[in-house]
Image (cartoon, rainbow, N blue to C red; front, top):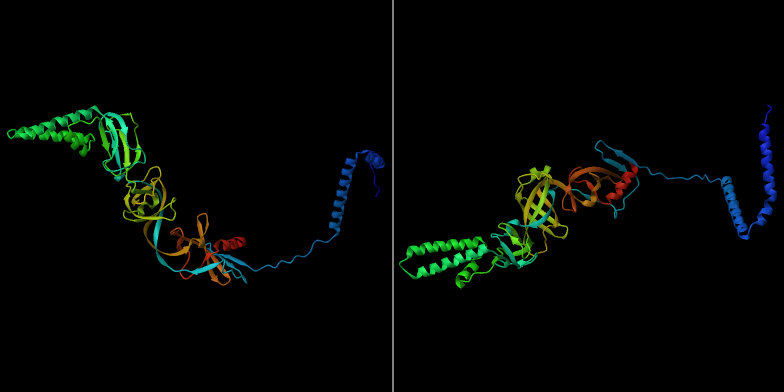
Length: 411
């Protein structure tokens, strides 16, 4: 077959080869015209290129396709309809120092619910002092955190109404004393005593203590200000007014509480509301004191569900004799709602994947079964299994995460 070549292509190739030949001829002259530093760099580049070409050539002519023999160990993974996996490991013995098994037994265990909540002051043992007269705050004796005892002064109020009530009491008290000296004015004396009782009750209603009323009757001197005293022993939790402020009738002044009497207030999920009753035992743990547990009884269950949280509020009384507990501390409680037949295992025996929990059972010396289990956390250290395993099964209590990785690789 005769080939025909394009004359223009032949002319272009002849021109290209001619230019390349001229460049090769003039290359030495070009090299020596460069500076010593540039000639050094050019030599390094040529040397590196030569090494690259030599390495590529050796790699092409050398046989690197060596036969690598991999000893495959026979493993067999089976999955049944329940989702349980069985893994065969022929010739493999699990290290007993890493993998530990225990034989299961059925027990009667408490059935519990987790209840998040917090501590608060016991409102039944707290007291809100409010103004019973219109007046002005002249002095405050106690501030937030200050301890108070029964009868301790809390604040002073100046009130014209209180002044007139004292004068009424002093007048009727003198009248009773005068009439008591005679024996013929018994009817007037009886009326005067009634009036004195009314004046005394008026002072009490205004917040004047009985001890102050007795002192007023003895001295006959009116007090310039109304001294409001603490009705309980405790601490000042919150102060609502400042010195010099004007107050109206019914305005809150100071809230007092007993720090030794607290409440645990928790919320139960709406779907568990049917399981809650008064008198159930509750075990409370605090984030501030993780090693301390508080035992109490539920004494209040709210009659309605909270419209915002969709939870049912429950409450329990807590004593705080050492004063370590503080209101508004976060707490987690476990509410015992009954008893259940279950198998208790360490938490390390359970592998969690989202909402699914797995456990591993040894079925023979070389085979293991991963099963789905159901249950509930028992006390933070153990898990109560109610479904998925049987008594006398050998469950893996240590090394479950490592064995789960073997299953995952075979899956």
